[in-house]
Length: 323
Ligand code: 8YV
Image 1 (cartoon, rainbow, N blue to C red):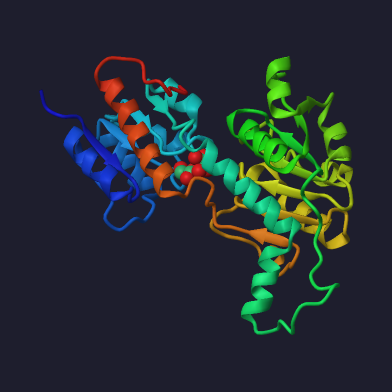
Image 2: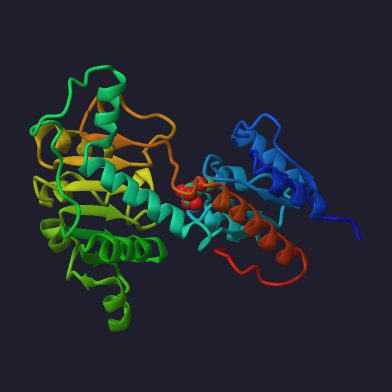
């Protein structure tokens, strides 16, 4: 039987690309440039499976392509807000993602941002590299203590729980969380976490607020001007979820006016564009969407896509089917 022909939109780790060509009749990306709407339409019209990532907007227009050949979209990443899942479903296309394998690394990166923002690490590095450091002094670049503080986790799924574990067991932090789903009391004990009645309660009590909810129409601009103003003035906002969850203009205003003390961001509303306002603020740590960017995790993500798409063509339900 002929192998399914699949198109991969971006470069993947070499060992995963090697595996892709063994398992499928695979067309790999050579230039590592996003395909754009027309390229994605052509791919859906010509291949049995397409393997996109967060940089590919697989929207309703793209999915309306005629004639359609693709039967499965194996997305590389856990978030799938770049795919119009309802439109895919309507066209009978199965969509899969890659949960679990990036939980630890994304949680590690949230802690990196939290520590960097609290301890002014980015600012300190810039200071030193600019040859501005004149030597140790008791009042130099004083930050805020992390150990023992209160962390508010917004979205207590896999990644939110992994962050809570690190904060509670590693940094002795009290953890508050907000999620539609309540953890069991054993889970709450394990994560040292207490559920808040509502988001506002969490925002008013947390020294650090870390976002871990998916980007959906309901969570778009969840952190708007009014919610940012509910945070404590000395609090720091961490976002490793999706840019859409934060109203970036309102965040800039909150940082400027001192309504909050700082932010650590890995994701942005218009990636890869980051506003000059953010780039020129010292109390903001900015990373280029590195949540899952470790060798181990990027390989595991690719293998997970292969596993999902293989299962589909073997007539089984892929384990990470989202539509
Ligand atoms: C991925 C992410 O690297 O998985 C996600 O949802 O945000 C990142 O960790 C990226 O989205 C790849 O599609």
